[in-house]
Image 1 (cartoon, rainbow, N blue to C red):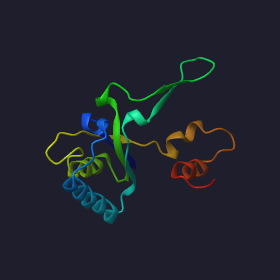
Image 2: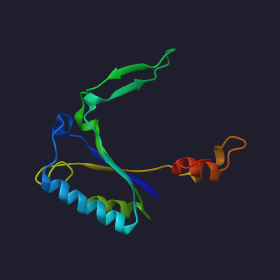
Image 3: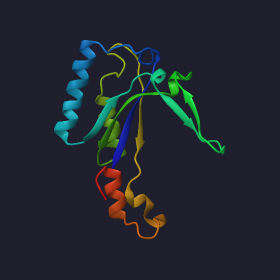
Length: 143
């Protein structure tokens, strides 16, 4: 099962503060451990919300675009890993092994969210779409 390990933003990440060399080194070791364990599918850090936008769908004829930055820092995402593990408990154990994501001496939050898989939609697939096709789409491969 896949989980997204979401690093919640803080004031430093929203200000665009660069990670310390010690944090970069610690994160590199952590990432390498996940690669060696065969669980890391993807992972990136995100630029501050000032460089982003939101597209709001509220029933209007056209979606509304709202440029960043966004006010509620604690609700924003600073980065993520996508991992493939056997259980929620294993995902939690990996998250607990992570260096504090905003600095070795700072508080941080990693939220874990399970990813929907193709079999979760088996009962509602449109006619002509197979679970295999949906699985390939979820994996980012050609149908």
